[in-house]
Image 1 (spheres, rainbow, N blue to C red):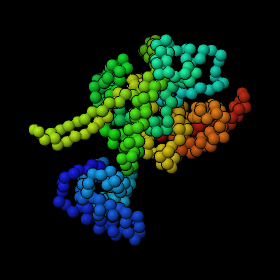
Image 2 (cartoon, rainbow, N blue to C red; image 1 turned 120 degrees about the vertical axis):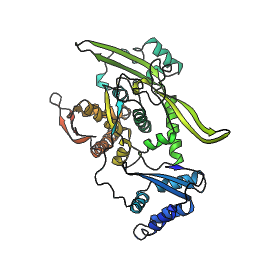
Image 3 (tube, rainbow, N blue to C red; image 1 turned 60 degrees about the vertical axis):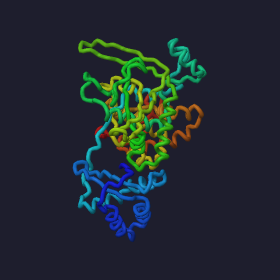
Image 4 (cartoon, one colour; image 1 turned 30 degrees about the vertical axis):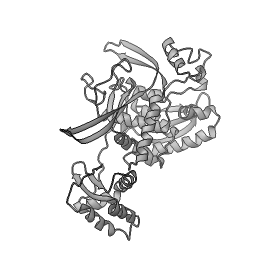
Length: 415
């Protein structure tokens, strides 16, 4: 949907929609609010209908461009009832068979770092994490004055940050050359790849905050507050640094292998801002601000062979499955863990229950809040079942120790 300041049509589409909405008031009282917005906040409206995609592209002229007006219009234009009325006017029959949503790749190394955790029973009396690091990495940590004992390995994200990372992975997939690994532009974004920030090829993307927020919200109506929220999440991610260590393994045709170890204490993205202007002569006709972002190379490293497929509408699905936009970290981590197992064709993965609790909620487990962890994990199991990833699970005693073990049965046809 786009908003324009100038009058762009003489068709009385607005009045036609209002007439049809008024016919629904008796059965749908909430329509009165929609009619009020059309009458008092929309100056004019027109649309285009794409038959192949079965979607409407709205072109709305508001009475003014204040935040209050734009928010009200955005809210009602996202309602199914508005689309339904126009479909009726156009004589469009709703699709009976849903179209495939498609998918995007998220790099396996990225997911591994997000899922990293420390299980107490795995600890051995060796060097601390800090003491085991390279001297250059130690200096990077000391510069930001992080206590040695507070150094943790992996990309630790909040639920909101995880949703933004999912959205960025999708934007990277959709705005890159993704078919030929040997050709230029393979998973490097819609700008020339950056080779200086990280010392190697890093993806570079340009997009509007509206585009990113639309992905973040799962396609729902977007307010100015939502855009500000996503902007703040990006800003926070830009300032955070993570200890990232991983090994890339490449195998040859004759069985030979090469291992490349990576270690750094870095941010996973860097932000900048660009302004695009268009005009004729001395008159500026168009102006748009875009976010320019350089993503850590881990967003594309070995993505041709080590990746996890996510449905394009994953954010929308998990919001619906959870019943709220405030999806818990535990639900997101369980989702990522099971999708990783699915990508490895492990259709019946097993994990000790106590280890699973640490995987999804390490902080709470260290604070001895196991009851809370169990409660949220039970909810997360319902969510991944609702998503269609998990068919069923059972908790059985392990043969050797008798301790509870979780056996999952995954949906190998999940898309």
